[in-house]
Amino acid sequence: MAGINSLAASILQMNGQANLASFGNSSSKNVYAAMVVSTDDPTGQNRIKVRVVTKDNEGNLFGGKDRDKLNDNLVYCYPLIPEFFHVRPIPAQVDEAGNLITQGEMVWVILENPSDESAPRYWVGPIISSQLKLKFQAYAEALQMTDITPFNTNLATNNDFKVDAILPGAADVAIQGRDDADLILRTRQAILTAGKFRPNSVIPNDISPSNITLTQFDNNNVGKLKTFSQANIQSSNINIYSPIGKFRENSLAKFEVNENLESFGNLANSLHPAVLGDELIKLLDVIIRVLLTHIHTPQNPLLPTPDSETLLSYTVQGELQNIISNVVRIN
Image (cartoon, rainbow, N blue to C red):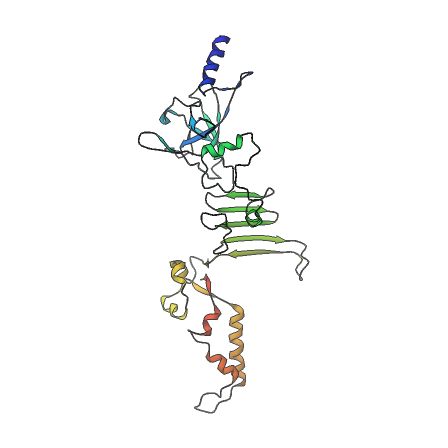
């Protein structure tokens, strides 16, 4: 029996289907790198189908443990990731004839019983080797992390201070989305960002950045507050509203001159512009000084003064527009 087992193992090894970790190890291999071929689970339980394949030196995929199986005959792999953290790997694409068009992403798959092809499998992934490849990384490229080589196949970012500073660091905890959106948790700080890079690049987005930063400041040495917290919201357009708040009537739109409102959409147009407090105080100060110092005779306008001349500039088309924000909307 031992001779038959050795012969079978040898044949599997030559055909890229071996289960053994090595010829000198009789224990079965349970963990494989696998390419995702389907995420279609009719039960909605995040089960996927994967194919254990072999990669040659040119990156071509062939053989492997599942070489003789049709996709429909591959067993489902059960997730080891709780649904509290929602993530789905991207599967391979094939043409009508079944030929591979695009590789799927890579996952680690654990075989409950490697000698039983119908036994359950479990998956963890997708396996992404670079923070700049979160949108998609093909199986063959991700598998390069297992190559024993001194060459780094990932695009280095640590030599670019601007890029490295906005990516999660080694001491950070982060949840990163597929396409340039993440939550980074640092010491006494949380940063929620959408679009930290310009589209399809690694150039920091300094045109339309959008983020929320929450920070606790301890042992502050500037000013009277020694300990305080701060929330910074940065975005091209900021809408702060309650569904039961007072939305703007259409007639009020005539008091605002804002060429960007059309771009900001229906919600922004239904909200009131936030008031810039210091600009409002500036106007009230002029009104109060005019009221206290004006001189006029009955049936005649007040005598012009520098303050009254300033007040004349506050019209809908003039200085009144300085009192409201063009980008922060409230109700």
